Amino acid sequence: MVAAIFILWCVIGAVVGYAIGAPRGRASEGIGLGLILGVIGWVIVALLPPADSATSPTAHVHEARRPCPYCAELIQPDAVVCRFCGSQVEPVPKPTVTVESIEARYPAYFDQAKAALDRLPNRPDDELEWLETVCFALRRGWSIQRAVAEATPQAY
Ligand SMILES: [Zn+2]
Image 1: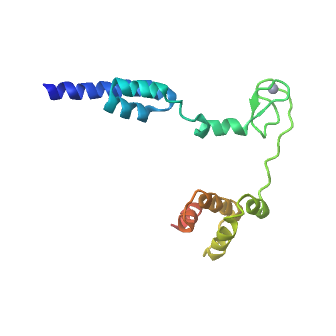
Image 2 (image 1 turned 60 degrees about the vertical axis):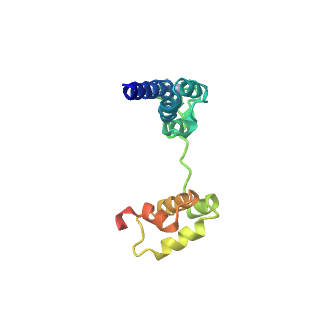
Image 3 (image 1 turned 120 degrees about the vertical axis):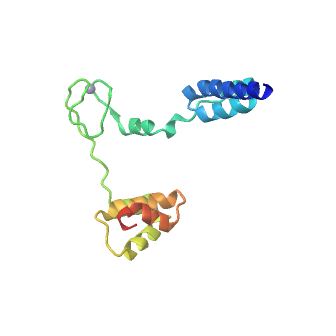
């Protein structure tokens, strides 16, 4: 009986912890702290700052948009007509990716990625995209083998 009450108490702690943590992007912390600490855990979760929303994919989408010069609503960078007010707007050209621009962006990793490209048995269809993917993966701390495998999925 005591064991049953204990288990029930843990479940309630976890559920309430989840309910407090979920809206703040801290569902897992809510479950863990509620489960272990009960009421004290709930208080801790409620006092935690909300999880960083800048890391969510939607934040990235917002970043890519720009305000319409006429109505200030956020529109796609390459839009020619504002979808909110219908005004004609100048499309913002996408930055042209070149070997030089990749080298400039990833100076520490470019040579390694370029050497790996030259060692490939078959050249990838889009060498620039391949180079950028490998450089990006290397900067994230991946090994060159893993970075190449990421950029060349069809070869593995
Ligand atoms: Zn507009």
